[in-house]
Image (tube, rainbow, N blue to C red):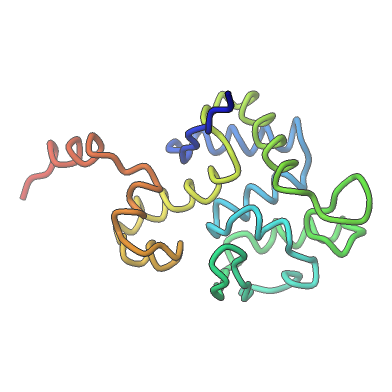
Length: 182
């Protein structure tokens, strides 16, 4: 019987760095850039793999239409601009994330395999394609504490969905309340 893996955000900045190292060392620059874009934009892997070089080359902002929701979404690429464009300069493909087989882009399934390969080397558990989006959401929330903005970015219908999605648990809330004082 197939069990659905409970994919979680990466909650440690050290583990994020370990993951980046593992992607570069044991996978490829393509997989590293996919991870970097995913954790810095929150875009779903299924939408990331559809990007073409012309969509993002030398751009600070990009409008994409999300596949799942059909809604437009603006991506801010300033935080990954240099790494992204250095990678693009090495490509000989119209696809941002080209497959090594044929002329197309990698599939979400291939992305999943590469992320799990890196996770094994980095010692990160519960990894899947949504790890990138959840990691973005978790750290955006931790830095801004603004669930309403994150809900809008992720196109969720309710704040409780957003908090559950990024793994903000009752235990974590209680731990924060333990140290809260005015």
